[in-house]
Amino acid sequence: MSTLLIELQCPQCGAPAVLEETDRLFSCDFCRVKSYLYSRDYFRYMLPNKAPEDANLLYVPYWRFKGMLFSSVPAGIEQRFIDISHQAVDSDFFSHSLGFRSQALKLKFVAPDTPGYFMKPRLSFDQVISIFEERFELSLPKPVYHQAHIGESISLIYSPYYVKHKIYDAVLNESIPTRPLEHFDLESLPGGPPDWKIKFLPTLCPSCGWDLEGEKDSLALICKNCSSAWQSKKNKLDRLKFAYIPDTGDDMIYLPFWRIKADVSEIKLNSYADLVKLANMPKVIRKEMEEVLFNFWSPAFKIRPQTFMPLAVRMTLTQPKEKLVNKFPDADIYPVTLPIDQAIESLKTILSDFIKPRRIYLPEFDSIEITPKSYLLVYIAFHRRHQELFQPICNYTIRKNQMKFAKNL
Image (tube, rainbow, N blue to C red; front, side, top):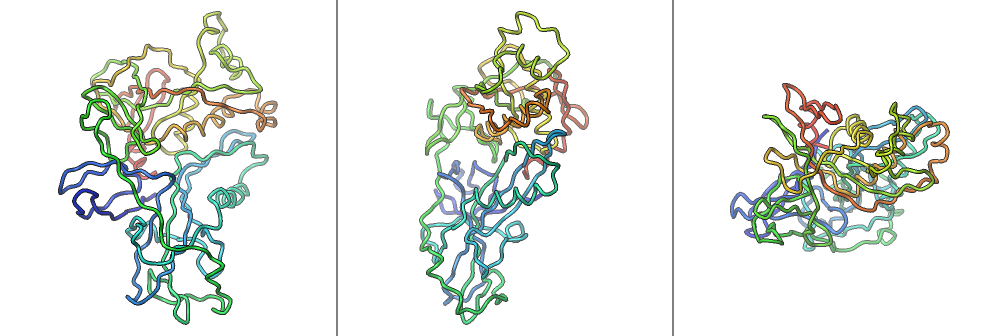
């Protein structure tokens, strides 16, 4: 697995810098100003070119998806990590994917002053992802009851071409084998100058004006001065409710989880007692279990799919009942790298994993709707051991190298 490298200029002083695609918190090495990168939908990048100076560049868009795909099948959950690209205009004159170019070359953000003709996508991302789902389903046991994309990174990457008697790949400045040019009609591929630019948010606490902190890839910024947390939402920083479960130990790190309260249609899943029945857990149902409200739990950080879903299911079945403290723990904190909307996307897959009996519920799974009502970011302590992180509440272990490689997801 690899991550894209993107060149940009500091919005404050103009100094050059290189970011990884997962970076959101940018700190300039020259002026020391920190900014938070955001987009109204998804980021748009372009590949470098070696075209002659007089060439009129034509930029072809490609959807790029990177993330986890979970499929609910009769035997359980099939998971895989995918990193794919696909042409967004559906033209035979250009390659249908970027191959490894986006990983091998440094990209740049598309800017309004970029010269060239930028084609508009003709295929939506949903159409393209459906193509890939159909391809992946060929290797899955049937039937497939539900699929979810989690931890996804969606972007639009523009690859440069130009036309001069032939169509040239401007990345290599070489002509490409294609159909006769008399069949090429640029007017059938609408586009124009780029109308998008990257945006930056100042990283000052909206509550007290203090400098916000976070890792480069963190989606939640924290203020230690007024003990608050913030996430970008609709062109501004929005306060994020959070808490942590206290623990004792000398060497711990707190990992973030989303605790989500949601309504589930068609089945009764309101309390811990309902969970015990639905998951066929070997427990005697007591009256006090009826009073414990049920919540879904999902990691608020990216990790390999073979760990993400088992951990989410284990935490959901455990239903941590320890007292919550509404401040930051006095220990190391792992950054939030998976947003709440993608955690919500995981809820139906979590349910499909523990629901029993599967042969009865899964064939009717399409009719089940999960509607989120509220959420809370909860930090839970993992004890550092030699090669692993151990969580005693749910009795789960994560290999340390998984957390290291998660930076590339």
